[in-house]
Image (cartoon, rainbow, N blue to C red; front, side, top):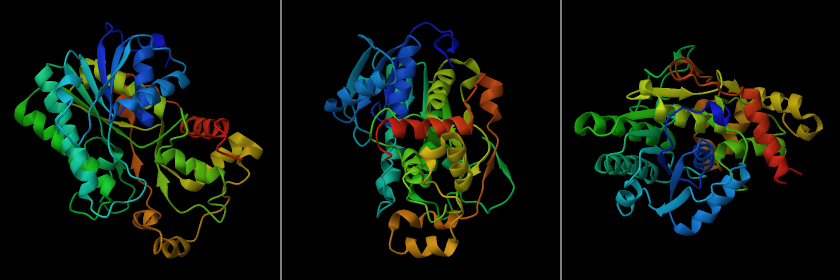
Length: 350
């Protein structure tokens, strides 16, 4: 999507929460490129320079159209000021720790309460619309493995044994819809992206980019675990926020954001090898025996949530965003390749 492809609405003031994150930084850049004035929330104002660097790395010169406000998902302070005078709010911020927390509430409570703080601030400020970044994790988890094709009509099963992050996204999104239904306020649109890939703007990597880095650096040379995921380019998710912000038909709707159906980790490795040649010499060429991953998970807490996912490929239909909003995402192959090329350019792959 080019600048001329953005929704044709007058230049607006847009609040982006979590501006220093992978998705947040790209969303700030895309909104600025579309001609909007952007206010970004950061946990501490000393993170403002990080956001400026991300925007610059995306090739955007914000001039005086980018400002910052300090606001944290875990506290009320700052949110009223953040929302004041804003036309639209794009809530991309959400906690995602590198390892599963000992107490799932460390993720669930800030995700839920932070989303509710954003919505209440938006209602108090008379914001025109709020777009919340949820996750496909709120749609397709906690159900038996099958050939079922998930759509926006589906919800993850909170009665199942869900990983804390998946549960946090499901609880937070349900709380958002319940609040709007009960108390009213600005129209709400929700995006449910799968794994977000695409170009890194700096060395602080998301978990998805960490997965590509692991493939490229030989961390999985023994074999790729039998895991599957959907992929989407971060720039396309940022664009979808702007479409959902502006399009009349987006109000009150959920949209899965995915370049296509799920692929296996071995599929991803083969894509990188075919696109990058010798630069992907260390990516795995075979699948890892499940027993090896199970044994490794006994001493590695970061792997434990992956064990129930072995061999479970969730099929999904992301056609709604294309039909309703005219969204045109890059291919899965392009999303993964741009991730790898950015990691190589940053010097993270020897």
